[in-house]
Length: 114
Image (tube, rainbow, N blue to C red; front, side, top):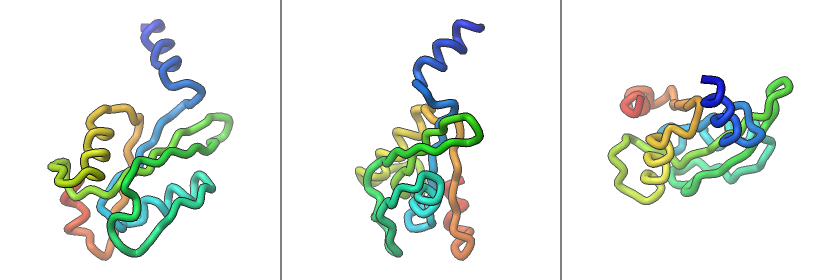
């Protein structure tokens, strides 16, 4: 079991944790990413602003955390290239934790993805 854990740590590089940010388009995923990483990822009040996977990092106490900002997606039935990027990443299980950001003003639609 110890060898398994050591191999897993080696695959991560210097990061203690990888967190993916997922959710519907235009719900605040990139704003959350910017707040944690200090990177000024472009944001906008319309869907489709993030069309590629973006990576950043931040420190939590003494640990380095890798943060992944994924394009918006309504379901795992991808109908566009940016939705495929998100679906494939989520199904790859590369992330240790997935934060599903929802827009409280459109809660019913956002919870469909949950």
